[in-house]
Image 1 (cartoon, rainbow, N blue to C red):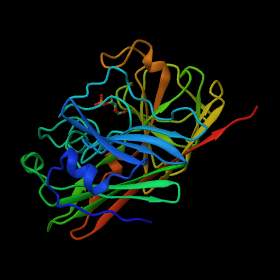
Image 2: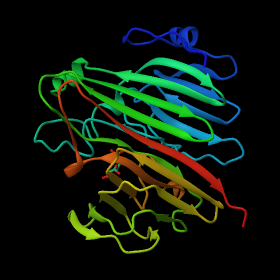
Image 3: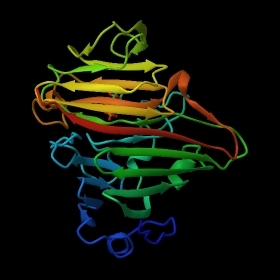
Image 4: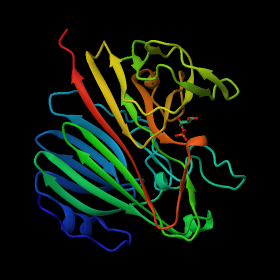
Amino acid sequence: MTAQATTTPSAQTLSQLNDHFGLAGVLAFREKDGLLFADITTPAATGSLCLQGAHLLAWQPAGQQPVIFLSQKSDMTPGKPIRGGVPLLFPWFGPRHDGKEGPMHGFARTQNWNLQFAALAGEDLHLTFTQGPTDLTRSLGFDHFRLAYEVAIGHTLKLKLTVANDGAEPLLFEEGMHSYFCVQDVHEITITGLDGTTYIDKKDEFKKKPQVAGPMHITAPTDRVYLDTTSSLVIHDPAERREITIEKVNSDTTVVWNPWGEMPDIQPNGWHEFVCVETVNAGDQSISLAPGKTHTMESHVSVKKLTV
Ligand SMILES: O=P(O)(O)OC[C@H]1O[C@H](O)[C@H](O)[C@@H](O)[C@@H]1O
């Protein structure tokens, strides 16, 4: 493993990123419309990330079709959420619900992260991004935390978020990896791994419902928060002839979302082309982190090609 230099947690420039972390033929940085991007090529996969939100935009293992959906109409403007990829959500999921003001899904997805580490290990590229208190987070009441986000791009995609509580009081938070997965046609897919669970149906007055046994089909606008779900999830995509498996670590909540209709920042019929299966801790499964402690949550994604 070839470790690269680390930087101080200040805003990084394009030339600093390329000088400190660029790896010829493997990792290069570029700037477009005020946003910084990392482009990745390894023998095992290609990928790209935006430094705003440490937002994964693409991942394509060698020999596979793209796995991560990114809207062609997404806003790519500093400070605006990106539609698609893997938005990283912290310190709340959805609207802030403690009566205070705050952006949808928290501040982590629209703030710049600092790259602290980049190295090729075998065929996988490992990146570590960090974020800490800023004027914005302090104005929202978050002053004593640090985040580290480790991303490994290879045949498998590994995402790991670590939260540290530097304060004297417990740190209460929600967190999520809001992954948008490419599918051939959302009408044709099924999802397994949710049998025997209960979900909150955000499309039906937040009623709690038991999951119907057997593979889950999506047939209508879907926004479900599945509780106590630690098992791996599988997206079965017969038209694409593949299965996408999402293995979760320290995540008790799973969210399944598809708008089932047009959205202003998604191309026409673009909603047919993805399903969100999200690795989350939220609601009753929010985290209360004791002073001086850390918490990690992980999502590991792998793809299997079906031969029949
Ligand atoms: O439009 P966004 O802020 O990116 O949120 C997109 C969706 O995220 C999650 O899946 C929530 O459960 C949904 O209620 C929300 O609509």
